[in-house]
Length: 127
Image (cartoon, rainbow, N blue to C red; front, top):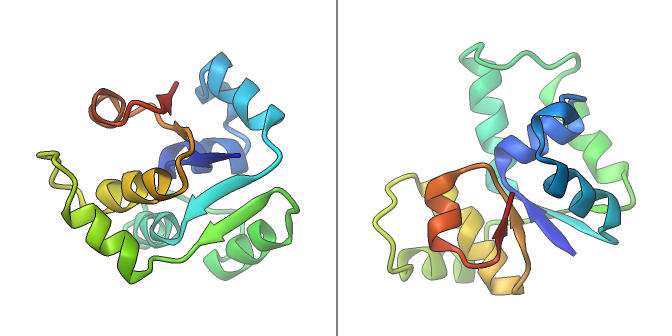
């Protein structure tokens, strides 16, 4: 079981797999379950709305496709994750990244991320 941050999810699911590190791609292929924070869906939607990301399908269809994939599991942003994110002893201001890290911590799983700030904070971050 692993978790993808938003960029890793975009690169993996939108066929930009060459942007993944070799190690990250291997971890994804070996994973029995791939967890995604629901905040990543929001981040992708914002990128689409700002035209920073172009999806070949609607955001609704994209999410439905993720839900249909056996290995993907979208984790809702629940109160315990919000509280956990607030309690992180980490001076990172991006709330989405805080929620993603808090979710990975809650489940005690590796987090695939190219983000150096996350990797320097979360000991189970992999890239």
